[in-house]
Structure formats: C-alpha cells, structure tokens
Image: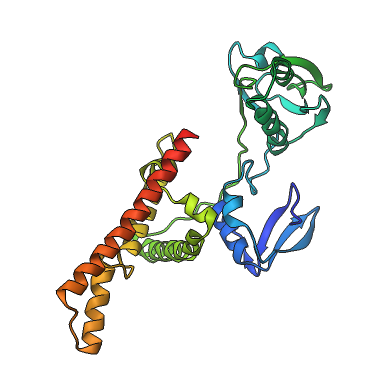
Length: 308
C-alpha cells in the first residue's frame, strides 16, 4: 500500500492520531481515503485502497502495524545459547543469518521477526529433513556489546524452540498522562462507551464475509482476549467491551431476545393489531434456532483454533 518501516502516523484522512491503538487505527484505515505519515522528516500522503482487507490484516503475523523498536537485549537467560555466545544485557543485534545463509543487517525487532518467521515455518514444516533442522538451528549472529566499538560475530545453536534465550528491551516511551475529576470522568466514560459501541456496530458487516465468520468465537476466544498477566485496566476494559456487546446483541430485533419482544410491541402499538400466540411462538423458535446456530459456529471455531 506504500507504507515503509519508520513511518510515523500523523493523520487518517483529516483526523489527527493522538493515541496509539493498532486495532482502532486499522479500523479507521479501512474506511479512510488517505493516510498521512511523516517519512524522513517530510509528510507523505498514502492513498488507501477501497477494498482494504481489514479482517485478513488483523490476523497477520508479523502484524501489519507495530511500534518500531530497536533490536536491543534487555536480559539473558542463564545457560542459554545467547549467554554462551557472549551476548549480555544492553547488547544490540546488528545482523542475523537468514534462511539462505546470508548475513542480513538488522536494526529493529521488526526486521528480526521478518527473518525469523520464515525460519520457524521451515523448521516446523512436516517435510523438513534432519539437515534442514540443523541448518535452521545453527546461525551466525553479529552484535555490539555495551562498551564495545567493534561488532562481534558468533555461531549460535538455537534451542529446540528456535530461541536464543533473551528478552527484548521495551522502549521507554514518553507517555502523556491526563487526569480527570469525577465529574469530568463521567462524560469521558460515556463518550468512550459510545465510540466503542459505534465501532462494534460498524464491524458487524464483516460477520457476513468468509473471514468474518471464521473470527466468531465463544468462551475460548473471550478468554484469549485477557492478558496472561494481571492488568486491572485491561480487565475492566475487556469486561466493559463484553458488556457493551451483550447489551447491543440483546436489543437486536431477533425473536426470543428483548429486542424481538420490543419489536412485536411497537408493531402492535402502531398497527393496533395483536400477533397471535401461535405466530409469536413460531417466531421465537426461529430466533432460538438462529442464536443456537451462531453459538455452534462460535464453539466450532474455538475448537478448530485449539486443535490446529
């Protein structure tokens, strides 16, 4: 589409991007005509395609949109291949051998992922040979240790999970903190809830596509939305999101739900005619079957994700 590593997102159409949220930005991009980025100190306007493949992009790995992070080591696991090679906290990776044996320069973790993901795919392929496995596990790495002025080279044998045994350093981003009084927080919270509802309703159209149907999930999907480590804000944000989704689904004019009963009542009030009990019973049965079919689809998708 014309994006490049290092682009700084400025505006989607005419709306300035003040808060980083990859999912929200991608959803806005799907409806946008242009995206303005800062590249090499200059603004560049990128024309967006009309058929922006949002669902496909949301499922991609490496992600379509990710913060640019320098390839600096935060910590090293004791006894790991990284430690044996002389890699220490603060080390900067400068080059990695790719799948074809070519030493490729890197400066960011984004580039590191682009080199390692094909390696993982080949290593996990059922058609690989013992020679392929050995080739994937033994790589040359170039790095610059803290205090050094010259890069070191090392031949590393990765572990069986194709890991070197280190943690990546997370940049110390400059964050803007904004505080609200109780009275200020109420309208801010209402606005956030309303915008969340609008975004969710806007995404429902994707449910009727092939990729959208595959993304429907049940308990397993809901559980995967929460972080593995406890985060109060993440927990309450996800709880609020699920509540908003349930509230909206319940007011849909589907027989059997509150929205279905309200629809019958409104029609009776406008027309002055009452639906027979037999008609309402049939309508509720149809609504029940629709809800059960959606539930079975969600459970089936969860099972397929777990198995495969």
